[in-house]
Length: 282
Image (cartoon, rainbow, N blue to C red; front, side):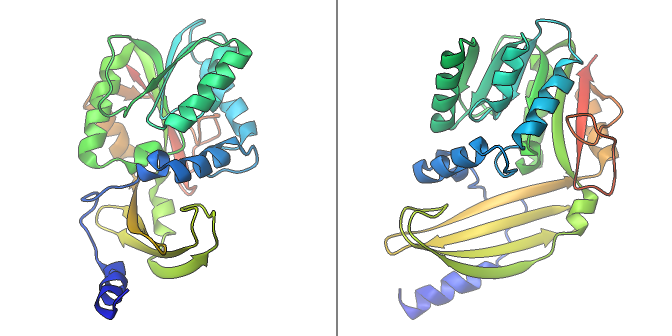
């Protein structure tokens, strides 16, 4: 790499794009190498990285199912390898899962077939996917809601309101403003060996974290350099005032119930990193 190229690479670490103006987080699920790493995180029962710990998922699936009529219809957005969909199906629910990771859905389908579970898996981007079916519960778990720009968030809520049957609920989790207050800006780098998270090749990871106080948004940006390639992954995180989020849902006909602390029913805590929402269609 020439000196001018290296200079541009390093000075780019301080560039501040407008919130959500560039987005490449899909690479985490569509790049074949990274997708395999993400699947491994999903399947590790003790790691809360791509999914919640499996013990929590067990409690969460039961807590959600207990708030639904028997044999109801569930749609899991961003279902990954089926950790929630399988548990819902075991509880006797009629389940559809949507995700755009081919590797995750292949694993999910294999596991469902091995257990004899009937789960409808759809490989698609849930922001463009549509259906004529109506559901009693739509789930979006692991704070996936927080990576969406305001425009994409509005589009998603409109779709969910349309997909829900009367009385149906949208259940998701989100980051708090208290969690945003604990984030800070930083730059750093590290050298990674072959077969690291990002690449089969040895890789240098340049990471910058940028905080946008006026919007309560954080950008985690990863510039990844190998001997043969260079790319940048932008991962945005929106943090929420619960009252503002509840009002936003109400604009689309979704009425939030008293907010739990998580999707296993813990008590709400404004000082925690996350909270959960159950919003019903009237």
